[in-house]
Amino acid sequence: MTQLMTYDAFIDLATADPAVVGLVLKGSQAHEGMTTEHSDHDLYVVLADDATTDLVRFTGHRSPELDLVILSLEEFRALGMPGFERYALSRSRIVLDRLDGGIAHILARKARLDADQAFREAAEWLDAYANSLYRSVKNARDGHALAARLDAADSVRFLLELLFALDRRPRPYNKYLEWELARFPLPGWDSSPLLDTVGLISATGDVSAQRRLFALVETAARQAGHGAVLDAWGEDLHLMRPQET
Image (tube, rainbow, N blue to C red; front, side, top):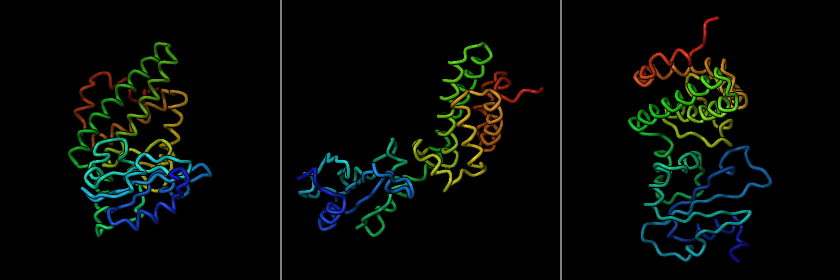
């Protein structure tokens, strides 16, 4: 019986249960234009704290149409703070909010990083980005082509974390990166050239592209108050920056 439960049938069942204070849909179904014939419904079922309900029998339910996460309101508040689920929650869709906007308020907090937290994380990601970029350029110089490409790909991961932290947003999953930037561009960045450049760097480790991108990142990072992180690299910065011809 559990395996035959459809999304619509479960929504009706949960909506009729007073223990349920929120239903939140995440994943492809919450991202307009991203669904395919293979897309299921990933649903958070939020229960009032200390509530008793027969719906707990669906805990861990997974089927080709419906995956359920059943949790208390307290657990829902903490979910993704920090954690991998934060981006999914930040772009999720509310199906039911019995808390007079309380579920929406919780989701809004998850979508916006605290200013101090974002500043600290941006500094860490900037240093990690610089480290991988430096290793990539140095390996390319020394003839280690595979290592250079792998370090370049690592640098892109850290770069994206950095750019979204600078805007106090959780980084989207790779699947939703183009979707996110098409609808919510990063301030000061043109989404299409940025995506083209990180795609080129990930695929080829192109040193010139890495250096040109670093020049833009360095400017943005210094404007955001992270000059000390960069200055700690000392003379090594010259290897990362565009070279005079």
